[in-house]
Structure formats: structure tokens, C-alpha cells
Amino acid sequence: MRIGMRLLLGYFLIVAVAAWFVLSIFVQEIKPGVRRATEGTLIDTATLLAELAREDLLSGHAQQGRLAQAFSTLNAQPINAHISGIHKVRNEYHVYMTDDNGRVVFDSAGKALGADYSRWNDVWLTLRGQYGARSSLADPNNPQSTVMYVAAPVTDQGRIIGVVSVGKPNSAMDPVIKRSERRILWAGGALLGIALLIGAIMVGWINRSIGRLARYADSVTEDRPVPLPSLGSSELRKLAQALESMRVKLEGKNYIEQYVYALTHELKSPLAAIRGAAEILREGPPPAVVTQFTDNILTQNNRMQKLVEKLLFQAKLENRLEIAFQPVDITMLFHQLQQQRSVVLAAKNIAFHCHPVEIQVAGDHELLIQALGNLLDNAIDFTPAGGTVDLCASREGEMWVLSVSDSGCGIPDYALERVFERFYSLPRENGQKSSGLGLAFVQEVARLHHGDIQIANRPQGGCEARLKLHPHFT
Image 1 (tube, rainbow, N blue to C red):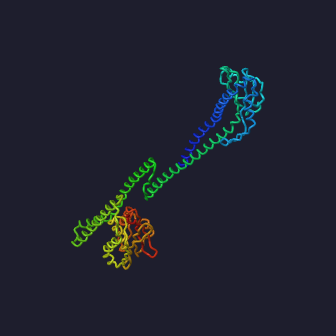
Image 2: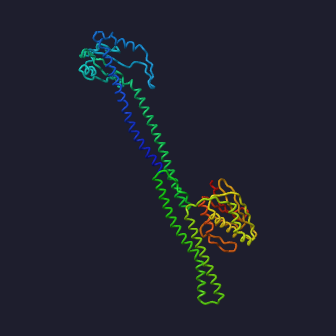
Image 3: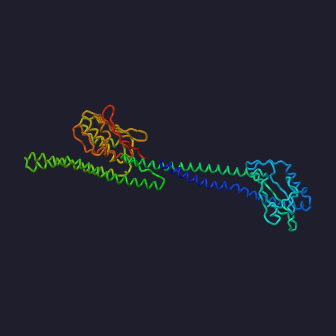
């Protein structure tokens, strides 16, 4: 299972358990909470009715008193109330009043008149000056028919002369309880949905950040490193920086190993030639032979010196992280290149077509003229006498393309993927090979300019090198 899915499941499990725990407490507290609130309302009502019923009880005709008349009017009057989605259509209070002996002298339902209620908790406790309440079944065969009664004393000059008890069926509170439970459960479901959405967003962000790190690591493995990704999390940012530091150290080690190996390989031939010439000179050959092998030593020494200088310059270029961008005039650049190569072009009778345009690009003038010079030198070396070389500029999207094309033999298919490797070189028309650093230099120049270099064979023969650069930043 992917780490993102594990994080999402773990996060959702924690939220679900916490939500279940909280919701279960809320649901368990709804019913007693509603009943406590109802009980408080009943005691207030009973106390108020006890004050109103004093005169009825003292008169001895409670069944025809003001309390009885009020309930008669109440029962005859229809109720049509909508309370937060609950439809109330009738009076749900059951009120009865007893004398100081606990005998019922008034019953709003008209059923218990004259009954002895002195043993019921609400009457018994209230007659003794205590808080009296009870919950009893209205129908012995129906466990859901419980009614809550709360009583208040009827007093006269500080003496308890009776009890007024107000009852309300617990079933009347069921719609309120169920509605509250539904709302809490809906809220819990919404909470879980929101938590799942937040978790999915969080996991998606983590997966995206890890994916960017993975792509960066893959690019390093494939020796095509992309820029270090910018990550929002400090931990992921530290991980990315650690990967970058590791990459730099590994590249530095590989870089030195490759250079030592390449330099050793390239120096083998001139060193062997110098050694052979030195062994012959030790035998005291004739002056003509001495001159010949002395010239050979100097030639090989000059070759090694140029190779070392190019390597040092290449290493210096590869260690540069950025350049100072300046506007470079393409017309002037092309004119300089044409002047510098005019003698070589004339010697090989190569037609040179230059197509300058009045544009500017952002870059380093010296690096660009060296890079384009290397491309021109390659084109001239691989173009036979009487051929053509073209240097032109064109717009491609937001980039300017400086291209060098020739009518030579082109690049073999097996070499197309290796032309930018250091020290990789193909034999020229005259059979000689170069140092193999020219195109590697061009690639580094393209990197420093945040551009690109591409080389491909042309359908009509020869090859074309395309150096892409950004326009001048104004």
C-alpha cells in the first residue's frame, strides 16, 4: 500500500474514532438533557399553578374553580404550532390537585377525582416539605407510556394545604430528542466528510512533494538533473537539500574520476610518441633525424598543452553556476564569426551563407562567440571542399534559435547520442580527430544561458546544430 494511502487511512481512523466517541457522548446526553430541561419547566409551571389554585382549594369546590375553567378553555381551543420543525396540535399537560390528605380534588383529565394519591412520590414528598417528582406508566402494558410528574405545594399562611402536580408524557419529548440526534449524526457525518476531504488534500500534497523528490532523484540517476524542487514543508525542504548535497558530492567525485580517466586516456598517445622520439634521439641519429623527432616532441608537447588548457577551461566553465546576462547583438556576433573563419573557408572553397537579423539575446558575448565558433569549426571540418555552411537566426516561440548547418556527411546514427560526451570525437575529412571537448563546451554554455543545444542530421544531407537562447530582458 502506498504511503499516501496509509497516511489517509490512519488519519481517517483517528478522526472517525474521535468523532464516534464525541458523538456517542452527545447522543447519550440528549435524552437526559431534554428531560432535565422539561423537569425544570414543569416545576415552574406547578409553582405558578399552585399560587392560582389556592383560592380554589380553600373554597372547597376546586373542580369548578378558576383552574378547572382555564383547563376547560384550553382543552377546547385547538393548537397549531410549528416549533423548529415539530408540529404541536394539543395540550400535553396533565394536572391534578390534592388536599392536605393526598386526595385528588381536581383532575384536568377528569379520571382520578377523589382518588387517594397520598402514596405517590410527588404528593408524599411535597406534603412533607420536600421536592416531589415521579415518573409512572400511564398504560401498564406499554413501557413507552411513562409520564413525568413534578409537584408544588399549595400553601396558606405558611401551612401546606394541598399539592398541585403537573405531568407531561415522555413521548411528547421524543420528537425533540430524535430531531437533535439526527442533527448531531448529520453533523458527525459532515465532519467525517470534511475530515476525509482535508486528509485527501493533505495526502495529495504529500504525495506530490514526494513525487517531485522522486523525479529529482531519478533525474540524478539518469545523469540529467533537473532544478531542485521548491517544497513548502520544512522537513521535505531539508530532505531535498540533503539530496542536493549528496548529488553535488557524488557528482564531484564522479567528475574527478571521469576527468582523470579521460586525461590519462588522451595523454597516452602524445606521451608514447615523445617516449619513442626520446629513445631514438638517445642513439645519436643523423642531424636530419634529430630535427624530425625534435619537431615531433614539440608538436606532441603543444598538443598536450592545448589539451590541458581546454580541460582547465572546461572545468572552470562547468563549475560556474550563473553568468551576468547582458544584451548581445546577433548581427555583430555573426559578423565577427564570419571574419574569424574567412581564411579557413576560403582555403577549403566552402560557400558561407550568413543570415544575421537585427535582434538581441540575453547572455555572455565571449561565451556565445566561442560556442558558435566551435559549432562552425565542426561544420567546416566535416564539410568537403566546394560545400556550403549556413549561419542563421530564427524565432521559435519565445526563444531565438541560432543554427549552424552544413552539407557534409552528417553524423552516424550510433554517434548521435554521444556527441556531447567529453573527449568523444569522430574522424574529420583529413582523418584527424579533435580533443572532443568542443560540443561539451557548447552544452555548458547552453546550460549557463538557460537554453538548449540540439544536433540532428538533415534530410538533404549534412547536419544542423541549433542553439536556443532567451531574448534580451528589457
